[in-house]
Length: 363
Image (cartoon, rainbow, N blue to C red; front, side, top):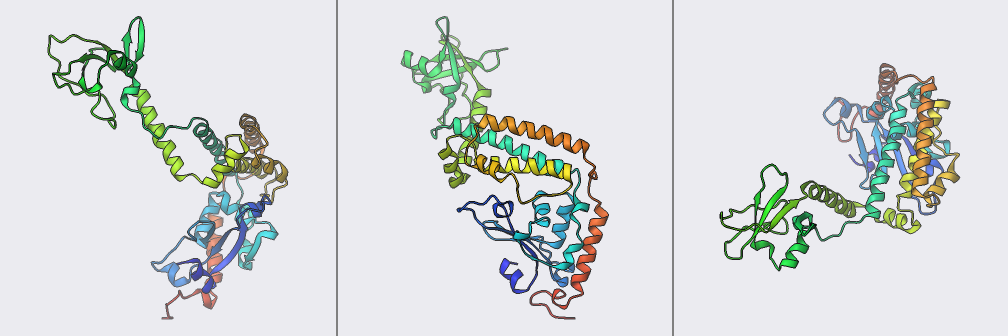
């Protein structure tokens, strides 16, 4: 089923502008996101064609089937609560049957997690992005040799420097384990004995061991920082996967303001934290933001990264205190919401146009 099918068969029962234009945070370049609710024909709902969600390719237009919409209300999903509480200017269509859903009966202390804790997770995400921006990883992947060190003189030197000083090739070297010394090996060199080398090739993930004749003289001890190499490989993979999948427009915006954080992500982090505080304190959701100026200042990169982290920590503490003092129910009444879903669906299926799916016929 496509969005076109929903419209052609008049299945959409709620449609709202969402995102920045609903929050009042739009700029001239903002997209127009749409979220809504549809109801499957009775024949599809009771048959084998249940479809919980329909969206376009970019996912900026999303419609939830009534059952899925009500399920997400039970867990106080932020997107769904915002949709239910859309400001009047953002409501394009809302069927009167949906008016029996009273938003105040849905809100609960679950919002501390769904709004607030999600916002905190975005701060952690911002920290990860900050690290990637400030510490880019070279495309050329390091080899295990660059994580090896040898004793030399009265100290130690990187293996690569040692090989250069000695004029050795890594493939002419052999390694053996040193008992009772983790990640420490004896290093030998002989161009004629066919040692396996310190590593098999540039893509090896560990060092190689060789059989060493008893009369061979050990050149030095080698330490392989295995943990450091494993950590590097993980960071390398994550970094270049991020580069491959990052939103270039968002990245360019991040670099343009010079503060090294995703300003749009940070803006929504503070929006969610403030909305969580309002839910706990006022027991309602304010989708249209009164703190527009402050949020857009964040988006423009006005604040330093560490300053925002400090402000976010203060907001988190304020949110946690607000929920401790809140009179909100611990969680929504699951049975009540499911009964609402039943009543709404029963009313719709009493209407002729919602009884039969596309291509079906009456029995």
